[in-house]
Image (cartoon, rainbow, N blue to C red; front, top):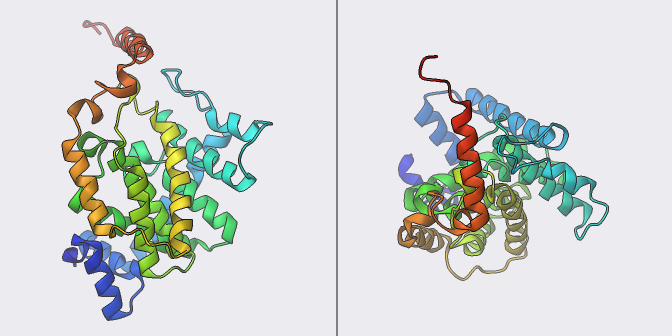
Length: 300
């Protein structure tokens, strides 16, 4: 079964041959890999989605102030902003994705799907699409399985880790998972699901990972919001039947190629990009001193 997830072509061919929906093969994979029953897998998915929803709620109601001070209730400020350039639904998407990621930056409980650094994207995307289209939890859980299948293939052929492939591999993969899940949940055919993934990767390709002071806060939190927006736009493009031109498996290969070529300083090392700005280094020094000050004395 694991061979099914070598590429999107194999997954699509399997569905065409068997008539199964996209999620079914992923469900079988989960049962095989984890040695659990189908009921246990569904229950686990429900728990994961409940945590995602809780993170969205907490990000918009709790005190989201990180120890570094770089994160300071951004989601609530956006929600309360009297001036907006977004539709109410788009604004909700942004605040939910940003808020759920703030929960992670403030040491709250999240689902690392596919990573903690990208943990606001799927919650923002799935909660919003469920609200917009009145989808059942079961539909969302099937979408989560589809998202997991997308992640499996990206991991096989590129990477999901910022330390390996830059932020394109982390928030980019999460956005691809989200866009594919959207199209699936709205009844799109396999070709459109895969097109959404391809378009998303094309939009996220080349994004570096440059966390200020080595913390998964700036620019990670705002990138979760922008990645959720790209997931929505990519899904809309795919649903409209627009051809991504470059097939999805070739997009994933490009993701891996760019990740391999990317300099080490742009892969979660905090040596380049925003982390290497004057302000970034000032913050790094302040955070480092703060960390040293809270360490216990040798005698304690």
